[in-house]
Image (tube, rainbow, N blue to C red; front, side, top):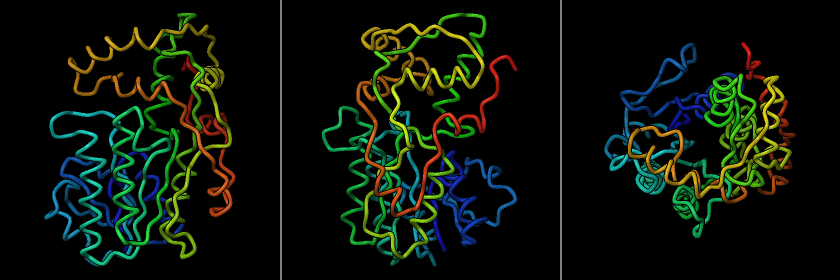
Length: 303
């Protein structure tokens, strides 16, 4: 039995589908009461209500489990309950302890590319803390560190696509920052493949992998590709990050789910790329290129 935390989220649901359909695995998903279970409709999946910040709720979820795939993460905070420290660091440590008590034989964890103890953003610092809880747990592990993940229902590419549709008749597209910061977008299907193989392969263990696509693209190149695939025409104008900070702060105060946060601005100032040679070798994977990936779900802006 494989337990997946975050199995109803964007990445998690793709992993669960892969495990059930291709790998023929028995899967249990840890879900909260409000989780969208319908996204896994039609799949033979067990559901167990629980919360990664509540140790008692994890006891039942871990019964009979051989492998844990821990996906839960956030990109926006809703203080005081939902913070990077509480979810990425404390929550992961809680799941690790529950897994160890239950005698879990393998722990597969989703960290993030660029996570490090001295990272400028709290997002990446707390991702590193969670990663270390897994690595030092004594449980055989696989840690996967993806860059930006793209695919149907992603929040990254679809955010830009939404803006392009809403400003279809405007010739201008505003880009925050220089547009030179690089990312390594990876298709969600490739991410799901890696997680499923990490969970089921005896040869992939006690390793940390960077997950990324074949191209290291600047933000300008990413936006240009999205515009091209959508059949739009836009002239990019760059706004200094310093100008965007007060706007982000105001959005944080006015909305529970702000479009832009100060943490996101911090992440926009650093490259998010890595060496994917080990991923390609051990998983025998040639990742899909960015343009090919977004063509699987983006439609023309005029539609």
